[in-house]
Length: 213
Ligand code: B12
Image 1 (cartoon, rainbow, N blue to C red):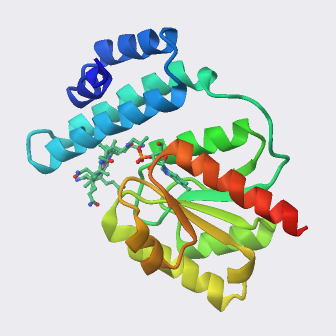
Image 2 (cartoon, rainbow, N blue to C red):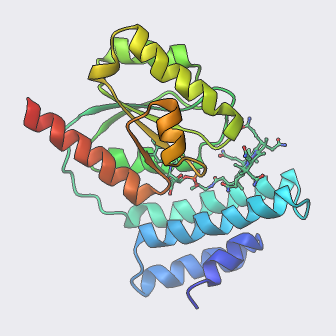
Image 3 (spheres, rainbow, N blue to C red):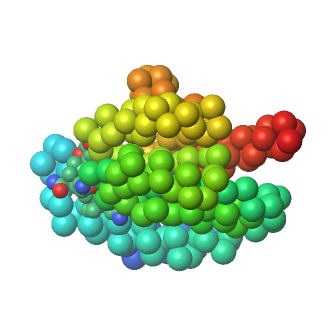
């Protein structure tokens, strides 16, 4: 059944989830498809948490299971180097410590040859600007999962404008809540809610930058 892994993740059934991941890989499902099913599963974990059915300990458990999944899945992502060291600054915005998704995207970007400078979690807007100045990176990836942290992303974009860097830096948002409205509100350039789309966007940006060189 297509939803079996989603259900196992949502039910925090670690043993079944990991077994299903192995089965699906053997059956030819791609690493991207599997991660997406797991992401949908933990989305249900999140819903159950907001409904009071699950507790914080369950959110932590879902993270642990997801890490186990990634250990199995990572070697199955395409490893073909197509990029040659384009620098990307990456981080989870101030106030937010969610990093599972960011780490997946960072892993994927590195595996195709991007030079990702990962600032970690809870990154203040000023720190992003400092890193851009220090490294000369022209692509910025910002992860956000907590909606009350979205204002800080707008601050990053405002600071880019104030420091005269806005035209040189492409801002890409990622994370479960981001959408067109948030992109427009923050002034970012792109957004992605899944790893495959995220990777596609970064490749497209890099290609366009190459053309302009
Ligand atoms: C696991 C989890 C946790 C773990 C995080 C562990 C970790 N190291 O990341 C822990 C237990 C620590 C946690 C804590 C909290 N959490 Co939490 N958490 C989740 C949960 C269940 C899953 C998140 C996750 O890892 N998903 C899996 C990954 C793979 O998906 P993803 O992040 O979306 O990433 C994908 C894409 O978005 C994209 N992507 C991600 N980043 C980037 C970046 C770029 C640049 C690009 C292009 C793409 C991209 O690619 C990824 C792969 O496909 C979500 C539920 C949900 N719906 O997301 C709640 C959720 C995000 N948490 C929530 C809350 C409330 C909290 C707490 C406040 C709870 C508390 N009372 O303490 C704290 C906040 C701590 C803090 N200051 O940040 C709420 C947020 C609600 C809101 N509207 O803001 C959610 C939505 C649950 C809910 N429905 O209530 N949480």
